[in-house]
Image (cartoon, rainbow, N blue to C red; front, top):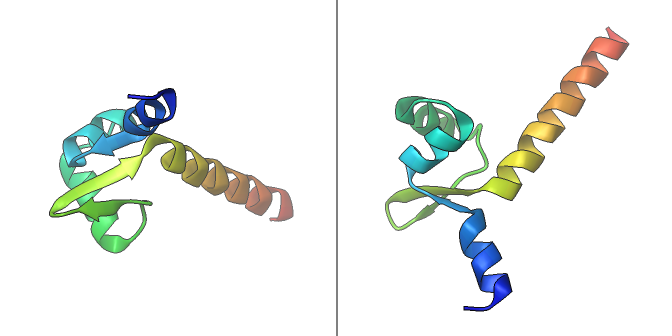
Length: 73
């Protein structure tokens, strides 16, 4: 495998259990947020997946929006 393929594979969180462990949530919380469309997840077949990099960007944007709301409020 090339370095790019290794990076791509290492970035993948395959399954709700892996996502939950990464985010320090329960599997049910991850599935609930996935079902509501509140996490940037996707399905590979029937398995919920996410990318560490995409989750990091998502939460950084959430944090920036909250900070902007506090500054304007």
